[in-house]
Amino acid sequence: MKILITGICGFVGSSLATALVEAHPGLTLYGLDNFSRQGSEENRLTLGRLGVKLFHGDIRLASDFESLPPVDWVLDAAANPSVLAGIDGVTSSRQLVEHNLLGTVNILEYCKRHRAGFILLSTSRVYSIAPLARVEVEVAGAAFRLKTGQKLPAGLSPAGVAEEFPTASPISLYGSSKLASEVLALEYGDSFGFPVRINRCGVLAGAGQFGRADQGIFSYWINCWLRRRDLHYIGFGGNGYQVRDCLHPRDLVPLLCSQMAGDGAPRVLNVGGGAGHAMSLAELSGWCRDRYGDHPVSASRTTRPFDIPWLVMDATAAREQWGWEPVTTLEEILAEIAAHAERHPAWLELSGVS
Image: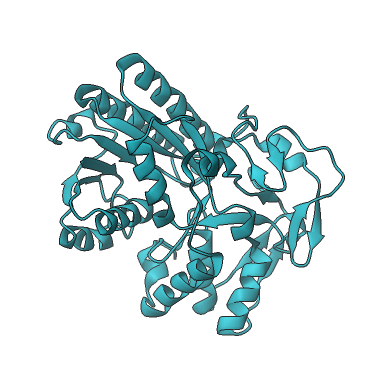
């Protein structure tokens, strides 16, 4: 089988490539990357040693696909992954849409030309912000949990957000660009006869993730704690009780292989660590404190527009359809990030953190 991974030199793309080569040594793997993200050059040599054929190109440019060989499947890991992208006063809204939507169109045209299957790594941020923000939470230890006794909206349970949860706006520019990509991908697949799979991912984390607060909060927090950098709890009382689940990208590989080999129903799935792999920032601080000693964290009570107190992915459908479960524990992910941070004292600077 021949596979192309877009955004292969990012954290997720490189993690998937490494795990795929290890699991399937006979695989032919190609990668496309424009190396625009700070730190992505670090993965080029590693991937080359694994036998991955790399192409320097930009998914926003249709002509950059002309020199790519035909493949059986495309795994799309190329995106601007920040929910604040385009509205933070630093990044461009037009570039966000060009990366996350126009780039998808170019990939889909490539799949159409070669009859290649397409797997989109989408996001939990396609789900509506307003009903998630309105859900009542209560404090349990140092974390929020869904308040017992309330009537929850359809698609939400203590197991997390399921695929039937609403996707109506507002969902952020980032979320809307990914949701539009999902719709286009499904239409292209139906219109031109190639298989399409969409995996809505929760927070992905592990060693080698670039330590930025808007893209890799677990890596950012651990690296900042270790280096005694400033850290802040933002919103929800400034206590750090907001909760997200965590998944290592390599745990996606068995699912991806099953999706490439199977009939693909259902085509849209949630994939995440789930309630068993979730923690709050305050709990993450406790973990860092146990490993590295005390470090102050300041508080801001101002809640940003797209912040949500509790967001966990319910991957029941992936388990029932494909027998998929995350296997890397939350403790293993944190320990892996910490060990990497200890070996790379300049990781924050390499990640573009001033």
